[in-house]
Amino acid sequence: MKTIRIFFIGICLLLASCNTLLPQTPALESDGEAIPPVSDEVMVEEAVEEVIVGQSTAGEIGPTTVEIVGGDEAALREFVTRWMGSSYPGQEADHITIYLGSLPPEMPYSLPLPDGARLVASVQQTRFEVLQLILDAPMPEDAITAFYEAALPKAGWQAVSNYGSGGGFVSADFGLTYCLGQETYLTLQISPLSEETSDIRIFVQSATGYSPCNPDQGYGDPMSAQIPALKNPPGTRMTSGGGGGSSDTDAYNETHLEGDLSAAEAAAHYNDQLTAAGWALVESGSTDGLSWSTWTFTDADGDRWTGTLFVSDIPPGSGRLFAYVRTERAP
Image (cartoon, rainbow, N blue to C red; front, side, top):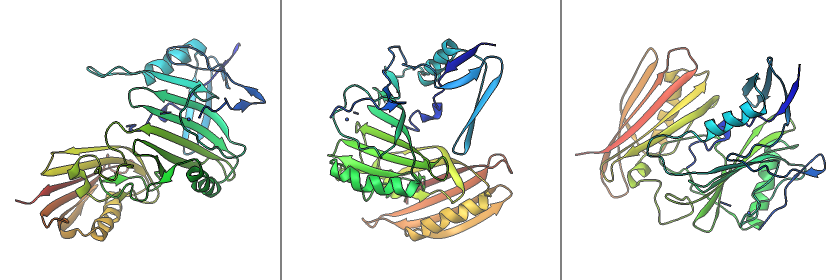
């Protein structure tokens, strides 16, 4: 049976709600040789993982196990192109370029990399002006965090102290955020692959709307700032989220969670954070798979607001939760 060498990019890398680019840095090396990019609509490098056609291969990345069954390099290229290039009616034009084992050829800023780091891929997206780097390094998470806390300021990046101060649900391990001026910001996410090896994701984005680097700009729309930052409970992982609202009367935020936690336990975790943020509990309750609470608070201008939180199992016992918080200006 013929062995086909192909590369599977952890597709979930695509811009978890992504909402540009480094002085030029040479391509990183794999086994001592620089890996050049391959030109294509979506650029996919030759084989880095063995897949036997007709059989399956599985690999574990953090808590996620990925299995690939069948196919060849052409099939993989088509899948990556279709998955990452998926669109909806009215979507604006976009172009995604994947560089396997290398950086884009031109980047207008510097990004330090830990000693021994291996660049798996970089992904450049024009519509959101985002660059994502995927690396691993033979260092534990705390050592990598310490490295970037020291190295990024030396490269001109400044830590954002108030990022995530409002707007709703945020991941407790979302990562470190740094600014380069008021228009470019970087988010760093680190997660363990083993006791001594860590997965590193670096997202760099040019601010086309909200920017955590602009002190004169609120968090998203102004009303979203009325909802405090709500970190997910320990032992859970945020898988998606979003929010919205009107310009001056209301806002909402929602998220999906995975983890071995009941709706009541998750709601209690969020209730504690709302109380700490100055919200006053009016009433709360819980049934099988659903917990809720209502609140009031007064903002810095003296205006009164009402708030609602609910958390539900979807479905009960599935290990998946849905959380929703809403605030509205009181009449």
